[in-house]
Image (cartoon, rainbow, N blue to C red; front, top):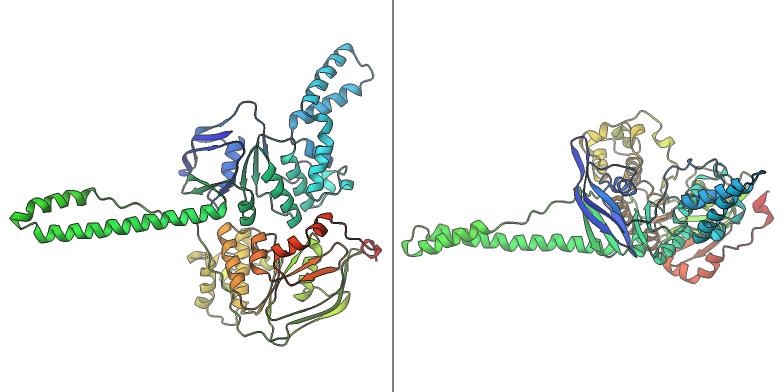
Length: 545
């Protein structure tokens, strides 16, 4: 168990948390939610001991081990992958290394023998003989192949490092597990594996995530941070949302009844206060009026942008024809002879673990890259807007936000352009910020403004939820559902894929494709065994052309 007792954290004069009292108990998974800047990651740092409080204390049950998902992806670059995972239980790792050092001695003394015996006993108590196999099992579950287990961390890609650090946090059955955005950079298969792991995990988990489906799947409680307080709700994210909305509605209805009562009493008092026979009743009503207090309803600190993609023209029947599309990157064939057509009602989700292939396909369809072979042809009634995964170049300039967006608008009026920025929560002086200094989330909201102002009837999205908070993701999800045009997109957000797509294309590791008219959940159910085996035959062309 871990608890916060009267915790206050002040940064300068501002209190980020004030007199927070909350208890996290064994056997439960707590989703820690709140608007950007509410202090979710900061509160995890307080719980882990990485950040001192101004007042109050964090209490952990004596003898319990706490494990944290590391955010520094370079911290373990000089260690092998398997060692990095085992270091999740630092005491076990230290014992292993001390044993190795003792047994490597040429002049092995009697004292060394006694110490080795002590270490062997503790090692066995900690299931040390199973450490490597347990670590390997975690890595394999997250999609890190066995041939990578003995490589150095510095030789892995960014997504692979994230998975290793996650395996490190999960290793050794910690008593308390703190996870800050564990699904970031994970493919959907790895997220599914993590969901099942946490559902079966018997100890305490506290997790911050912007993935609503993930929170709904794993959480038994929701801890909501708003205005420096943390309110605990039994149930997952959806239950919290319904509960919080119900609470606000109930308070508003109670206030409405009180307001009606106040009005009734005021009318009685004004009507009869001068009447001697009614004066006693009027005085009584006045006392009753003074006792009525309206409940203070604080507006939430959460802000939801308004995302509405409106095409300038209706799309025709001929949308897109792709024939024999093939592309090789660095000697590896990522797209192999893809052929398909797109209809005017299609909302297509590109799925599967082949991240590069999905991005390359979208880049080709957006005109950002040429295929090695094959053709694609957009219908004459179509106009496309593209959201790239890597949008660094978009903001590598000295333009202010208003001027940046104006260049993409047919209507050059500043008031018109500011209207689109306002929908995305850029108000007042925000419009004169330079785009190069914007945060990741602000840049994404700028790109979504660009897509809205384009009036395109075909939208191409490559992981648009990266850097967005929960409120913006919800708004984007609603905008994607309402969009009346054609959409081709990738997303790690299960709920967006499930609620938006009516057609699923999975690009396999060998560059070929499975194409089905279905929802995402139906697709997962129908192809569950094939997906989990992950044994699609890789033909020689994938290795080298």
